[in-house]
Amino acid sequence: MAIKVLVVDDSSFFRRRVSEIVNQDPDLEVVAVAVNGKEAVEMAAKLKPQVITMDIEMPVMDGITAVREIMANNPTPILMFSSLTHDGAKATLDALEAGALDFLPKRFEDIATNKDDAILLLQQRIKALGRRRMYRSSSLTPTSTIESRRSTIAAPETNTPRRPLSSRLASTTTPVATRSSLSTISADRHSANPTTSSISSIRASGKQYKLLLIGTSTGGPVALQKVLTAFPANYPHPIVLIQHMPAAFTPAFAARLNTLCKIEVKEAENGDVMRPGCAYLAPGGMQLMIERSGISGRLKVISGTQEMNYKPCVDITFASASKAFGGDVLAVVLTGMGADGREGARMLKSVGATIWAQDEASCVVYGMPQAVASTGISTHSISLDNMAEAILKESSRG
Image (cartoon, rainbow, N blue to C red):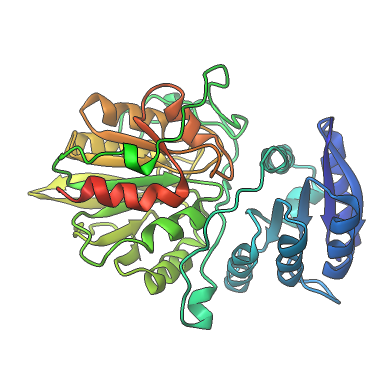
């Protein structure tokens, strides 16, 4: 049965084109369109769509208010369309704090010119969210200012699917062989999904870690905020965050996380020497490498190749960490579409590192975590609500 979609936009052109693109896929069906947020709220209650695409700026009721009302009364996966500007980024932060699950750049030229990559990406995002069961995590950490309350953003996989990553890493300094594609909603579907590990079953191994890595994509900013706000200021290791996100968003995302967290959070810069209790967010549109520098690590930011599926790419950063720190790494793969992180995690595991994954029930999209869990690379599948506690328990002997 086709996934039922409600399209919401005040532009008649955009409503028409999005509807045409959605209806091109036999697995999708537009059941209605709305011209403003008020209509969207009413139609969500009446028609019970499985996915809603939502514009932000609209008359009568804006998209952010509409998202808030829909999530309060008729929780539905919502995909926002956002402009890649400073104001667009701020509005997207608000929309995803209100409860939207994901967003895509609103590029009229891609829609108008029938660009195949843009069409495929939109269809795949809607299908991924349409298969999603609404997960009610415990609330995010409350904040004390209006600005810090506007702290959650979604993770766009803005780069389009291309040929396998394994044939495109020759120009980088990390020899990883991997296959990451937006068409891979979840990897290795033939394998059984691992059982969620309870927090009581996770016992500290006593390993002496030197680095924590977290890789994520769709749904990742919400997950990262939940995990990182639970960390104490004296967390004993450097933290490297790889989130699929465009360049326009990573500085703002890092700054907002920094206002919420006890640890320091910053966008990674070339040459940064990693410090304990500091989280370094990979810059959007770039690749982040980890190098050993004495007893600590140093970050290297490179442009990579134009053919890379993801910028930043979890596989590349994980693989570089396997060379720099060997088994002294705890790597966590959180919610996200595709399989980015699987081959990098495999390299880390081969040198003795510890790999964990987010469990299926708490993921927005169970793609990246399943890619490492179903192949036996990760040792635990952990609920988002328990992830921070588990990491802190495992890191306590570091």
